[in-house]
Image: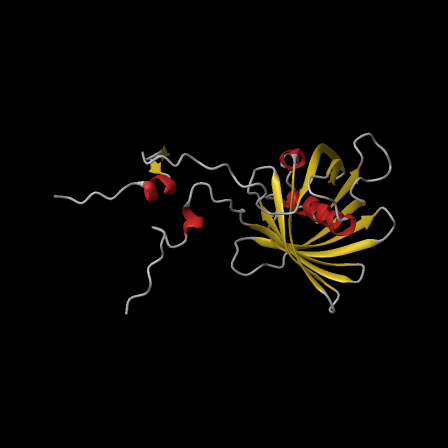
Length: 238
């Protein structure tokens, strides 16, 4: 007997519908110890240009939390402007309040990175690094980061993991916002960016608004939207 046909015209409609909210590709993976918990996180691009998502778990081997959250804001666009440093053996970042106050609004004071040439399988030029995050209370969180493209959005990854540590320690509410200054110290030079980040308890965030569901085909880049395709009546040829 043939397989049952799905009711939708497309087998995986969420994968093709124009309004389907989808995260971007994975930028890196991070593993670190936070208090009594072992944490594994995937750092995920987007879906917006100014957003990062995180998916993974935190466990003390008696209780395991499955993690899925995101951060969005102008900081990520500005972090893109920081200089790439693919040949530097180490890089340092300082996190502080934009008014120059001593305390960091995310509870992470700085990050120190030491790079490795260890490759990740299945990805071109994917590197790894050891990162030590110094918290404002004097504790250190040491992370192993793998599978990223060195010199390509590496700053997104390191700053992103710092904000993930903030989320896991502070447990912010949906929509909570902080403004952060990041000093990027490389080769004896200092570069600085400042921007806001907002916590959200989803990777994909708020769903996109519904599109026109008229029976008239609507076009985007020469292709009709799924809603229009599924709404069109079938007319038998005579």
